[in-house]
Image (cartoon, rainbow, N blue to C red; front, side, top):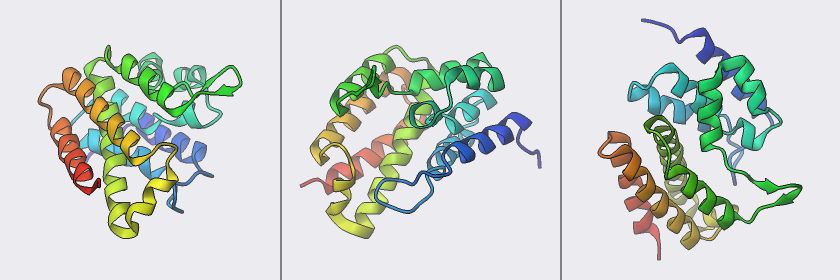
Length: 190
C-alpha cells in the first residue's frame, strides 16, 4: 500500500501545529479534524496531491499566523494559489468585516474558481454541513448559537454556495453529497 507523499505528511504536521490550540465551534473537538476530513473527501475522489495539501492547509492563512508566502516557500506556488482562493478576507485593515460581507465576497470570488478550487470549497462546506447535522442530532437547535450568523443566514449562505459551486463542478459526486447534506439541513429548519 503506497504511503502519502512527503509533502502531504509535511502539510499534516503544519496544519496540526498551526491549529493546535483551536477547537471546533461549540465543542472541545480539535480543529485539525476539519482540514483532515476535507482532505480525506478529496483523496476519496482522487484529486492530485496539490489539492490534498491545499485542503489540509485551507484555513491556516485565514485562522493562524501562517502567511501565503510561507506556504508558497514550503509547498509551492500551486498550493499557495489554491489556499488563497478559498481563504476569506476577515478584516479590512484592523477592522473585522461583517459575516455577510465576507460571505458575499467569497461567493463572488468562487464564481471564477477553477475545478480544483471548487472541489476544495465543496469538501470544506460538505464537512461543515455534516458536522452541523451531527451536532444538531446530539444537542438540538442550540447549535446555532455557536455561529456568527443565524440559522437562516447560514442556510442562505450554503444555498448560495451550492449554486456557485454547481456551476464550477457540474455533476461531480462531491456536489451530490453537498446537495444531500444541504437538503438534510434544510429539513431541520423550522
